[in-house]
Image (tube, rainbow, N blue to C red):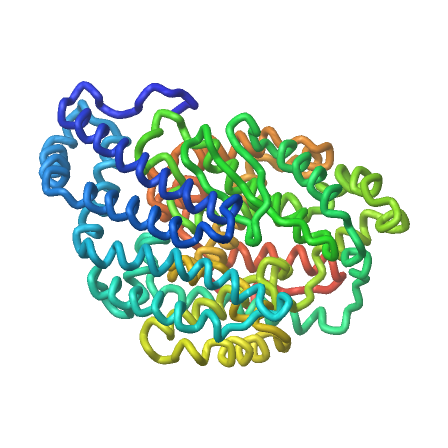
Length: 526
């Protein structure tokens, strides 16, 4: 595949042409709904909440109605009967695979349920914002508790409608990472937890000066630096935007229209710097999808875990490396001479990589970040099964933070209110963040094997060959391949957490000057 506008599908077949026409309409409706969500977080006045909830609900209901029409089912069935002949490509087969999956799932959800869920989620997002900002930014979970209970009630019903084997969480998890189960996560996550505990135990007491990261950094100067970073990494501003939002996110309407948001904390420099690198990683994935897939559901990342691998790849493997800041730190010093003038690049790199438990996920270091994901996974898994109640979430959250990381969030905004995901109905999403760390380690290992001079290029501010490798192996394919197949194509094996463990032990062993033995941790990777 190459970046082109010509369709990659068998448009000579009349049924495929009809299917592509229907798919284009569904894609446009989904994009319209996404645009309404984007505007809600970026531009919408507070008073527009009720009207926006109604608008999004209407769009979602229309999309569901069209997606579940029997005509679409019959069209897919006819094409399934002839797609194995020589006139059809892997793109045709992949599209039919995804359409069949989506049709079967959507058909299980009643129309009234879809409308109700859209309204509840839209309202919950606005309630979450108010609850998070309450008490002068300290937050008040009680304002959000009933909305969160409604979200999870609907998610339980959704799991029942969809059907599942084992835990009801599997029905939701499959929507973000196809084929993954609670049983697998309960095997993978302990590997990450054990590695985290090993590193935390070994670096405990090591003093790293991070004070200069929390000085006053004017938002405007941060913002100009963030734009320059994003552009240099390859984000195409003729096909994208960078805007401000409370919680950074990336949204795509087409490879020609990809939008990222970021925030700049005047009291903590890394939030804005690494936020924009992270979101640029997502955006590069979407801008790199072959345009021949446009107008179909294949024109986007194949799973949330693979998507997150791209953002974590750029944020951590590139953006937190010594080589990256050999190039960028002098420029950052010129932007903030009074804050960073007496700091050298080695001190800066050690500070931005310091292993230091934090109550905030998006500000967590590379190692303890996975613990934040595990905590959220365990809570939403148990909420869904009814093992715990919504009203007890702040207490359970804080207990887990103390148990896993030895810290106690001081406010609800530092604790159970810090993420927007649950208010949006994104239950089953959080594991993708740690899966992204694992996939990123595997991809990075493959890239280094093919390009052993990667460090030298990064130190010169040259990222073109990295983008090209990622585009060729991952981005251009969109959702043509399922995550497990894509991982096998690129790395030769399925998801394997030991690559991340090896990477973490090597990196932080060097940073802290200690010997971290990987062979004693997990035998998955020989």
